[in-house]
Image 1: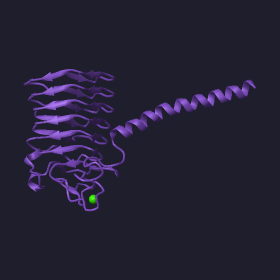
Image 2 (image 1 turned 45 degrees about the horizontal axis):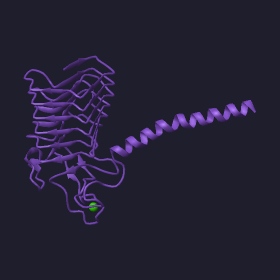
Image 3 (image 1 turned 120 degrees about the horizontal axis):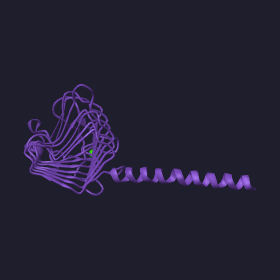
Image 4 (image 1 turned 120 degrees about the vertical axis):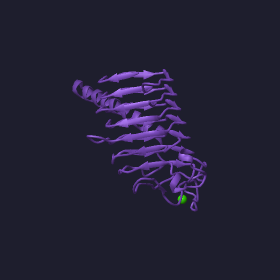
Length: 247
Ligand SMILES: [Ca+2]
C-alpha cells in the first residue's frame, strides 16, 4: 500500500502480506499519519517504510514479521515508533540518511527479536534519534552472553540509546546489577561507532523486568493529563472572570 504526499490518514487494522514487489506500507513524503494495529508479514521489500521528508507520523502496535527490513526509515524525521512487535526480519528497524538528516525519531517500547542481522541499524551518520524501552531478543545470532561480533544493534552516527530513567532490555546483557537498582552495572556497547546504552535494563530490580520511572504509558498519561488540564484550568479562569464581571 503506497501513500505519496498523503497526510492525515488513519491506517488501522489491515493485513499487508506476501508482496514480492512492494513494502507492506510505504509512506513517501507524507506527514501526520497514524499507522496502528496492522499486520505486515512476509513482504520481500520490507514491512513498513517511511521515506522522503515526512514527519509527525505515529507507527504503533503493529505486528511486523518475516520481511526484509521490518521498518525502514529514510529522511523522515520526528516520528514515533512504539509498541510494535518486530520478529524474524532481516533487520528489525533500519534507519538511513541521505541528502538531509534523519533525526528526532523516537523508537520506544518495541519488541524486536530474532532478526537475522541487527535488531536496529542506524547508518550513514544519522543522528539525534531516541531509542529506549525496547526489548531486544536474540537478534544477530546473539547468545545469552554479549559478544561484539553478535551485538544486537548498530549505529555509526550519534543517537541516544537511553533516557535518564531507562535504556533498553538486551537478552545478552541482563546482569550484573550489584546495587539492585534495575540497571546493569555497565553499559551495552552498540556496534559501528561509539554509542552505548548507559541504562540497560537488568533482570533484577523491583519486579525483575522494568525500571521504576517513566515508561511510555506514563508519558502518554501525563500528556493526556496536560491536554485535559489546560482546557479545564482555562474554563475555570473563564468562569471566574465572567462571574467577577457579572458581580
Ligand atoms: Ca545496577
